[in-house]
Image (cartoon, rainbow, N blue to C red; front, side):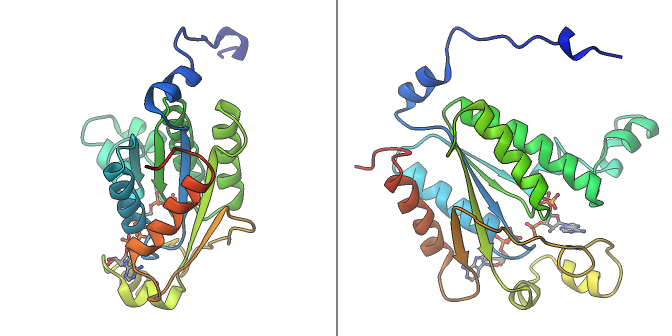
Amino acid sequence: MTNPSDIVWHDHAVNRATREQNLGQRGVVVWFTGLSGCGKSTVANELDCQLSRLGRSTMLLDGDNIRHGLCAPPDRLRTEHSEAFAARFGLGFGSMDREENIRRIGSVAALMASAGLITLTAFVSPYRKDRDHVRQIVEAAGREGDFIEVFVDTPLAICESRDPKGLYKKARAGEIKHFTGISDPYELPENPEIHLPGGEGMSAAEQASVVLRWLIARNVFQAG
Ligand SMILES: Nc1ncnc2c1ncn2[C@@H]1O[C@H](COP(=O)(O)OS(=O)(=O)O)[C@@H](OP(=O)(O)O)[C@H]1O
Ligand SMILES: Nc1ncnc2c1ncn2[C@@H]1O[C@H](COP(=O)(O)OP(=O)(O)O)[C@@H](O)[C@H]1O
């Protein structure tokens, strides 16, 4: 067994403050959470564009994309690794798999924020304890306020009516197990930094601008 004390943290010559100063911004994690189809990816992508147009340094991490690599499912891993490897490290949608998915992403997002990036993440992340754990990881790597939870609160009926990938239809037909909102829980954020009422009232660009204004108001970077 590896003794935790055998793994020693290395402080680097270039620290976070220098990296943030060089970029002229504060490294943060903007954590979009909500049901499948609520608009997380679209709003995060819109915000990424708005920040990029202002010359900010950003990165966007998205559920579907990360599940092609860092958090790939067993089926994808077994094409290049052993069956035992795929079974051990591949991630599905059971509660423990989602816990590990979010733990890995939270750790990577914390590293990106430590590099001074405005790191946007769009994951269902249905379990409150998992989101809270990411908050701890991110703020332990930096300081309080580095983790910004954004709840995209689109009603299930609207998410299901959109169903851009046909997953709700499959879930209703029992073809997908543990589908969030249908056969798996989504634990509502109790006190998100930003609550975006979903539905059709605001465009994704308008929702993204709400987050942008929040970031500017809290001096994550100086606009203009
Ligand atoms: N069972 C089940 N439950 C929920 N979502 C499912 C499931 N199976 C596949 N998908 C698709 O995977 C995307 C969610 O992946 P995430 O990594 O964000 O999920 S989680 O944070 O680990 O809960 C999610 O993408 P988005 O629609 O962009 O949210 C779904 O399209
Ligand atoms: N504010 C909005 N108003 C109307 N449609 C939206 C809005 N935000 C996203 N959409 C649409 O909803 C669907 C799901 O958006 P997506 O970003 O893929 O959701 P998620 O990443 O949460 O699964 C897409 O077709 C997208 O164009």
